[in-house]
Amino acid sequence: MLESSLPHRLNTDDQVIPVLDRFPKVEMLGIYRLRYRPQTAKTAAWVAKAGEYEDWRKLYSSLF
Image 1 (cartoon, rainbow, N blue to C red):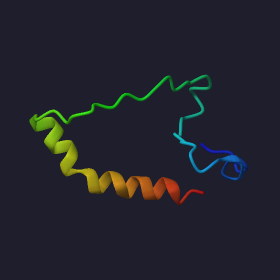
Image 2 (image 1 turned 45 degrees about the vertical axis):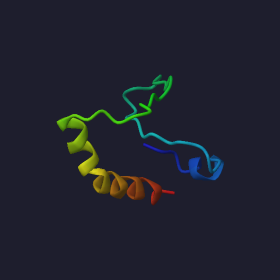
Image 3 (image 1 turned 90 degrees about the vertical axis):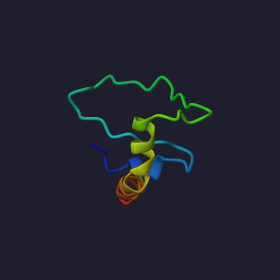
Image 4 (image 1 turned 120 degrees about the vertical axis):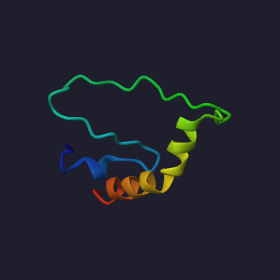
């Protein structure tokens, strides 16, 4: 999903999101984040898996 020269062209602040090649013209328009976390069961379940998300972040970072 990533070309081999990409890691050399990235700045430290760049965000890389892998996209399958069957979506050639994908664009990221923006990322919205809530200022305060909603107190719901679904949000609590998501926060409980935060360690797993960190593992995925490390895996993606290791690609470079």
